[in-house]
Every structure is written in structure tokens, then in C-alpha cells.
Length: 184
Image 1 (cartoon, helix red, strand yellow):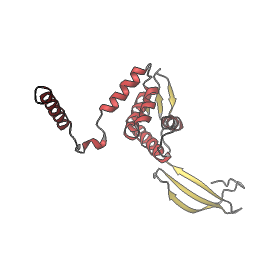
Image 2 (cartoon, helix red, strand yellow; image 1 turned 135 degrees about the horizontal axis):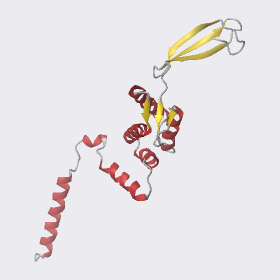
Image 3 (cartoon, one colour; image 1 turned 60 degrees about the vertical axis):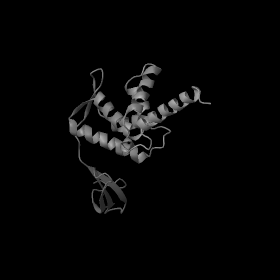
Image 4 (cartoon, helix red, strand yellow; image 1 turned 60 degrees about the horizontal axis):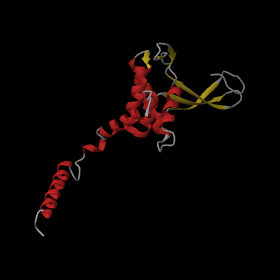
């Protein structure tokens, strides 16, 4: 490795560690000539992932573009940067294992799936752009669809199940009708 300060090719590795997600190795090096310390990263060279756009054109996959679009959906939301990075890592890993060419619709669907589980407002923001909402009705339909879905904590029994609530309302109607029909 060439020293960034003096250009010498003689160095030694002082420290070597895996990155947080185990996708790369971080190495601290010291130049043997000038004693300058610097960091290098070693990672697997990935095959070129290509995105097939809606208009059938191809372009190289850009991780930063994916991260920026997700960050835009999370703008002014209380979601950590770490959550965003983990989400991007998961999506990129899924895309890299699926093949060399990925349709943009598949990328969008994966993003929507992840956003829906994390933050519904971010999901709606991303969906409005990705699905090209033309008017407010499409937005309202998406909100209603979110409301109908089973939420993760919906598996817990409800304190007041809907059947009980309906029967108690019906019972109160019977009481009120009896009250108005003669008993004073």
C-alpha cells in the first residue's frame, strides 16, 4: 500500500478489525519510512449491479441514490441514521443476491416493504413519489390501506373486542327504547 504522505510502498499493519456489518475489514497502517499512520478498508469486489428503469434504459446501481431517496422519506421523522443505514444494507444485500440486473420496480417494492414496517408516514411519502400519486384520492386510498393492515401488536388480544362493544351499544339502545315507551 502506498503511503498517502510520502508515497513509500513499505508499511506495516498495526491493527485489523471487521466493520460493524462484517462486510469489510478496517486496517490501521504505519509507513516504515516516515512513520505516518493511515487507515485502509478491504472489502469484497462486487459484480456490477445494473438497474433497469421504467423506460427500459439501464444504469449502474447507486447505493447513495437509494440512501438519499430513503432519507428524504424519513426527513423530519424521529428515525435514527443507524436504522436508515441498516435498511439500505439489507436492501442492497437482497438486490446483490438476486442477480446482476434489477428492475427499478423491484427496488421500489423492497423499499416500500421495509418502510411500511418501520414508519408509516415515511412509507406514505415514498409511496406518493414511487407510485406517482396523481391526486389526493390516491393518497387517501393509501392511508386507508395502511389503516386496514394488521399491525405487529395487533396479535395481542384487545381489551374491548369489537363484539363486546357492539353488544353493549345494542343493549344501550334497548334500554333507551324501553325508557321512552311508557315507564315513567
